[in-house]
Image 1 (spheres, rainbow, N blue to C red):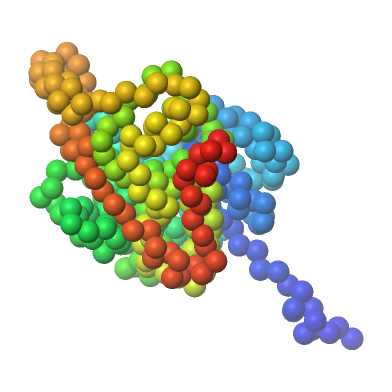
Image 2 (tube, rainbow, N blue to C red):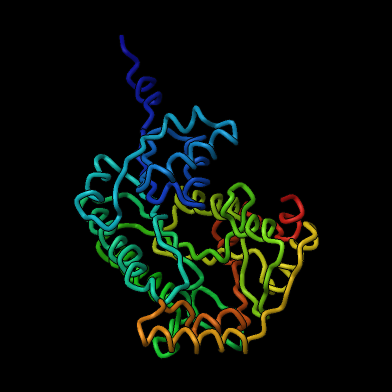
Length: 335
């Protein structure tokens, strides 16, 4: 006679997880961590070159076997039908796909990838009744405050000029909140500047490789890639929905950050006066008006490079009791 109770207890409910932008800096760290614990992981990628880089990343971490068990699917996040093809039998979504640039001339592409791409992901989450969506946003999508720490409740002021990247991430968040209004449980993370030493194109590695590094007098929030991965997975696995979380371990000056790394690697650190960037901005604007050069700098970008923004990343500790941030300087010393 079959013991149905025992048989039922042995059943394992498998969920299908989709990670968009799985070959990016954060995405490949996230999908590696997920795949170490779970099966049925779909990784979305756009370019074969990035997929090969991700394979090498897994191999470097002695995880090639895990790479091979991931279901890799090629799709352009800005193509609705290709995004739709990713969602077959998917239960949960980590939306990491994004384009990062501070250049003014990249505005249209930023909006296409970050806003339109997120719209397509959200539409499919709603249509497929996804169980939970995690969106990787940025502290760039949060409001500003000159008198106190910036928190998740700091309001976005549309009258303050922002960078094109900030506008695109804020617009992306609006799409994700639309998903929550349509019944999809969501969590949004707003990481600070993410640092890591396991990729050649990481911020730390760029400073290490450059003999001369320039810094400005600004202050911003920093967090390690490992902390972002741990927090993201923890928030998805917990009974938490329709909340956003700033992920910032420490607020550091760009000067201290650059000098700390440069000294260790015997590189040179040079202060960049604000007046120089404003001069470059004026020259760029002139040649851009004549259609002789694409415009990179904006007043908003210069302001962010020299402004002092202090972010409070403590909210997550109230929701994930065992989560502890990694100290930035101790992390850098190990790089």
